[in-house]
Length: 453
Image 1 (spheres, rainbow, N blue to C red):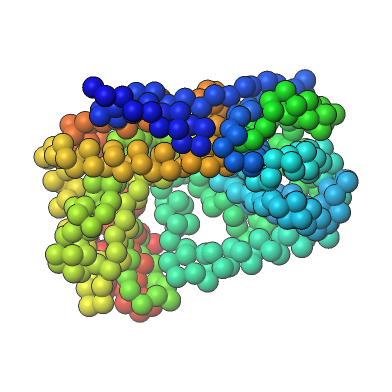
Image 2: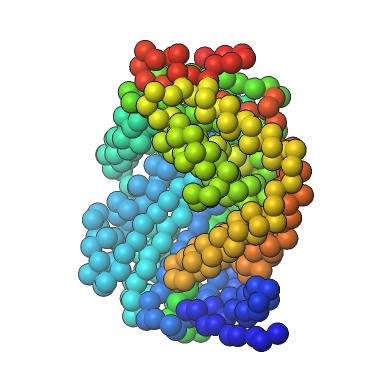
């Protein structure tokens, strides 16, 4: 068998006609005396460096009636720190040819910069200053200003967006009230309004500490010099107290919940959602593959029947929303004008029953795996994608170089695995079925069986 070699931006992949036999991203790891974990990946393909820091705190660390803090800090962290005046974080990076951003989810908050390699020290200085000296520049007025920004973001993303409140209604009914995934990452309006300045300071002191963070630097670097720079800029930040692990209550649905929401929309939309296995656990990869079989492309089962053949749906999608504590498997379909959500649900249920009853073809499964593999490799084309993946693997598995193990989960999926996982998790008596309909058009909803509020 002829072996070919492909070098893709420093990622050495051995190809055979059977697929990738080896995928390795070399890295160096060290820990500062204050507990900050640091991972370095050297890649001289282009003169660019990605700086990626994860704080192991997301909305899942919040408590009922105190939600939205993690996302609020994503905003506050860009408002200046002890040695960086307000507005200068972006200005200085942009002047050096870099860019930056941040994201929050239930499991973590991440901040990242991509800069020319000669501006690495600037990025490290900026990140270290807001970790060590944010409180020197924070004030009640700044917190109030960003609180208002977040409230407007919530209005734009949820209250004033078509179908925007659907995800909130689903989460409230899918997991128990004391589970960390019960509330949205952006928080509630009431909690954002009620949060005091002291509450915000206490949150920062508890979670924004070196021992609760991991820093990845990937790209055109000299590892020896980079380690010295990290030690110079981060070693003086106090370690802080250890953050205990989350001990969430069990999330398991033992009934079907049917819900109807009226919204300012023109077309009704159906959501069918199940609790599913956490990220990297058995069943997670299988449900990714199943989602692709159902809606991945124009020849997928649900797209072909709903959109192409019957022409009763405007669109349809399925996906496994993986997370560390529990995941969610979604099927979402929007009806075409003149059709009801009961029609859509009937076809979707037929395909769910079919996948439980009949093993999918080898061709379907392999097509889904191939598409996932292509997407997997595409994420690793740039240094920022590699930096974020190294951080994710380290945070969730303890092994930054988890690439082979991750991809192997998918390549090992068989048609019988898909049927088994559908039987186990896509239970008719363990799901939320939400109909979002135009105002005054509840007759378009999928309302068979017990209805929720």
